[in-house]
Length: 507
Image 1 (cartoon, rainbow, N blue to C red):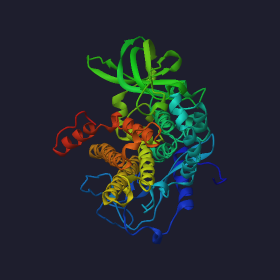
Image 2 (tube, rainbow, N blue to C red):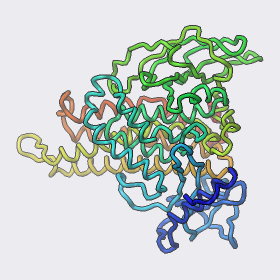
Image 3 (tube, helix red, strand yellow):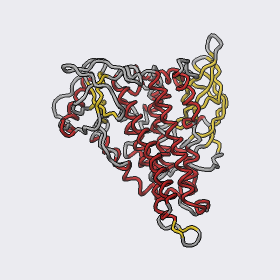
Image 4 (cartoon, rainbow, N blue to C red):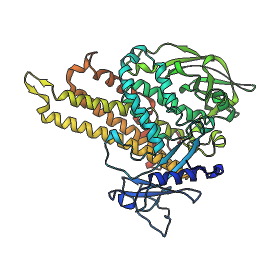
């Protein structure tokens, strides 16, 4: 970074953007002619960002700016232009490590799934490579992690040392103040080594963003004396809050609290009653020291996540350690005032939360495809017939590969598009939020179908406990039971919106 004196805070993003453009700038000739580019105009009218688009869009050019245009998808927040060079958005600097996460939006390339990092800034790529370097160690200990039913403490320490858990943590409390685009890619990359470690990382990393949405005092309670503090959660509202002086009293039992053995805080959902007698949900932060952990995690897949149950019996929760769920959905939490320069504070939770755990299944299905393709080369059926010589095999393998690649690329594109829209500063329309959820669950359906085809190709050998395929298949099935993968919960609201009906539940 330049040695000149630092500008005022309101200019930090512009400075970081300028530095990144000089570092990552490309000529117009180097931009791919196959894809049009969409310019996102910030509400401030000062900065612009270029993002490559696969879908057909309508070019609307002016002398230097773009007019607002509405595409078939009602993208009212996208201003269209073409033939512009790529630029970037700079985020705030993390003072602890002097690292800046730069959000760079670049033209799409025909790269492979394993090397899809051309869009990353230098700081993002450094974090991505740190995750890649962890893969051999994670893979070597994956079996023992399953057996222990918990991620090893050394893996958690390694994630902290690599600054990966800090990506969505605000820089005021020692974080990197990044976004879900690079975060989700790191989750997927870690899953290529160990699914359980990737899952727990996704939980801890995402919750740094959720904690940052709470009132300022709650964030001080969590990170004031320990910037490395993380939270495990069970956000389904299985508890009840009783209003008392200064806060609430909470009782409830919460299953599926991944990584709770390594967490300092619990993050749980509960129902409470407003002044009119209506019920609504609040998220609550509770020290793990006040929570009873029930060791009941004996399951089909993702055994190593240690997702035990949390039990709370009449625990006092100060009012400042709670936040209404509806505020998280709307992106209007107290965190917007605490971190006004961090766009993730405005992110609608139901649109951005699905970019955390779902990438685990993307990494898993990539592993499954590679293993099955290798096994098919030598598999023999009915005595002497080589499975690799069968056209049925060729069709199933190709169809599986296509489904997997379509699912992964669509997921990544949705994540990139969502982050770009958020950082534009323009309100994200309801239709876009619904379409994001629709595409994510549809990618899960493609993965489920591809997994079934690959199991057929593998034959009966995968049923053996000693088969390297079996734990991957079990993990995939377990991932696909997560609430974010339920097909109808995303498709019904989108279908209702197409008919002019209000989504249920509201978005």
